[in-house]
Length: 532
Image 1 (cartoon, one colour):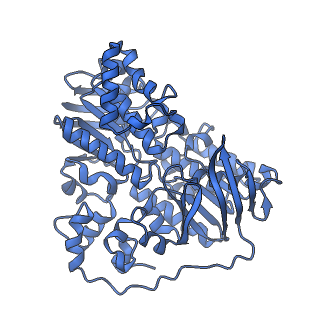
Image 2 (cartoon, rainbow, N blue to C red; image 1 turned 120 degrees about the horizontal axis):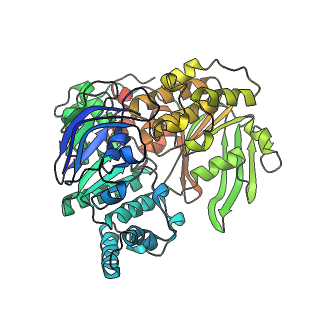
Image 3 (tube, helix red, strand yellow; image 1 turned 60 degrees about the vertical axis):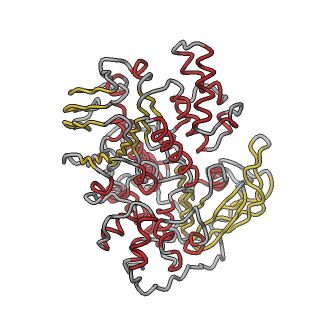
């Protein structure tokens, strides 16, 4: 189905190939998971399969690629779209029209398919992905999981033989991610569709893959094999696998079902005393009092009241569309309450100029590219410091923490999604804001980079800075947040210490917490007796 022979590729204006002598074969009907550190070439490998590399990105390409008997290098991506359906990391970038049904028809119209064929295929893909009820909805009103399934349906209307997906769950809550993955598994099993998928959150998808292709990104040879075989050899592994390796469990568990027999025999360490911090809130950093907000008549926040103290690390969690991003935008002053009051460092956001508010805040939105405009990563950081009246330079340790030292003089928009995410983080954190707002900060980050980010944010917290993070990444929240605010339908559903909220939740809980729920452990370090 797919064969690469000695493929080497280098992007324009870069000195090092991102793919070097890559050779592999993917069998028909296989589910291949592509893993590796951020910037290791995962997205590049996927783009080779439909000709986006080198046709769209340019650069220098060598070697041979065969997909469904076609040569993507000789054929343009439009021709390859009959054979390869490509779903990007952000589904919104590939939507062209506004209604779901029109979006499904668009690609078929471009290929001049008969109307009766188009009608038949629309009905088929809607049934396959369980989106018939969305037929007449506007794409802009869909949740993240619904958008992802519509994007998959849109490429399936051309009946490709290979479906390629670039981090399809990176912006989805746990339940929506599960819905998308179940749909993919059904397509793989029922239709024999070959699926090639890249992902950082391996705890979500490793159990579904037939094989894993791990691209190390350090010049060493790639690893290709069954999931347990590959994950046993790499550091970038989900918590269950890391725990299994640390405790010598065999076979290494990929799912909670596989881990439970081992867990029942394991003698848990004495449970440390977990004391949630309750700092006195003499002057809260952030206050919401009965805040309501609506987009075009649709209520997004409904009577939100809460206080966040200086030095607190808070995770905002909840399903897509629960109101997390809206709440962050209220804090930074991009949105103003329709009713109620938001105060930041004692300032009423409705009566204070936004410039005065953002003097206290560092805000990283979901789309990191929105913050990037300078010619180099270094200039991005210098601009931030200069605009805040700070001395230039002095951020080498920050670059090292975020793994950006080697990219300091690169053009930010030429970087991978994960690298751009880290650049945006650095450009905000370099100003040393009193309040740090992060909206899905781990999109495109591998496990090692998430650990470094968590450690850095914990350091900022110890300096008295407030960290408020909207995230679907339950493992990150378990590792570093002390308080979780769970939102649902624009309201606060639960607000409490992370350990209590996660233990009481079936969806928003870490893998370790689900495995040792009675012990209320959250992380691998808890189980190994290394919790602090």
